[in-house]
Length: 411
Image (cartoon, rainbow, N blue to C red; front, side, top):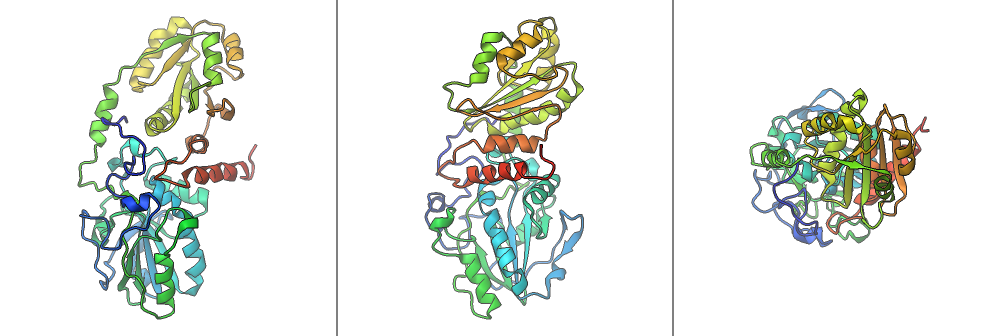
């Protein structure tokens, strides 16, 4: 869904966080100590407070209660989300905390405070999925996350009680369930430049029976997406609906130029489809949504119908239903084989075909038939260079691609 406003990708103005990133932290500096992000929507739980009671569903399908975590030397509750690039960047460091201290008396759980209905599509430019419970399960399974991951997006009551201002935002309680630390995990998104390990130091102090050296720091990341606040989702969708939908014929020379992706400096996704292809229709929405997610990044997207020119009215009608305001093409003749040759690929024209072409013109990914949209997005994201505000995002998705290539049964 297109935003009504467009904001340049910089360290100080970033797509998904609104006012949530502490500006110094976004530039690699230490986040300011204090009560969390200035003017939080809900008050941050004061140090020394007891853990509020909660009952939340986990990705394991079970209900998890705060009363389960009484026999522990320390309890860490990390508010994290699937869509946020800062949260994604800290995923590995969260896992390190979990694996390092779980056998020493630490209980580690994560909570997603966001509801996907409160997140605009243009805030999803750095992720392969949304903050829904089903996609939380996908992310956890893909990345091997095995700590309890709970969902608070329906009511957000637990997030309000703790005053979770952002993802990530960590709260660490002692064995009596009294809050002893809240804020950032550390002071820099770049691991090599971290000077203060807030969460690690707090955990080690509690496990050793010592006072926590620093009780608070300013959390930085993507602002919590509160359902109670106006998020711009409706305005974004209205803007999409207002975009004109057109389709133009494309000949052999046009297809050659499309395949070359020369001089654009951007990654190109080309999606071939037909009005007579049921699978094309079922997968079209996900690829279209990917355009709305990524179009503020160095990304281009073109659909190409393989239908004969006589079916142009049907092609346009389908595209209009999909609100496809991006570039759309249709084969200029019925010579499907010849036009495929011009593009440089062969596939069954009764099946969908997608190709991701890097800025250098090399094919990054291609697939005929059914594909996994998360996989497609990971390949695309692996080609995007980091923005100054989100170091490590490209490396995360390059590692994700490597993980997919090493998966058992991978062809």
